[in-house]
Length: 68
Image (cartoon, rainbow, N blue to C red; front, side, top):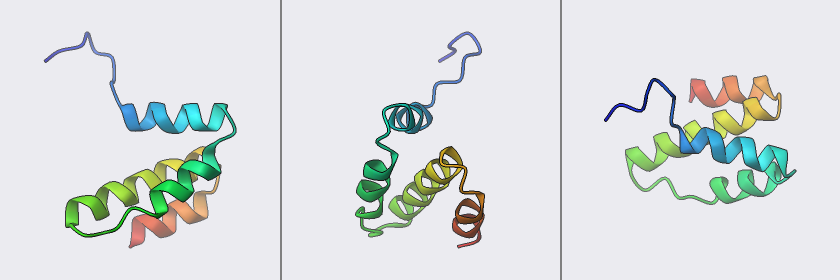
């Protein structure tokens, strides 16, 4: 389905909103609790951790997660 060229990314919007509301640490804690029971959950968890690290300007952590 086309959306007129607009990027629709709920995960990015969630991270941006958490940062705006100063709730990024709470979101990080929630994501860190997600069990890595399947390869899909592991990838999703790592992707969220990278997005949140970038939002917090913690590029070292983002880089480390990408290397896992």
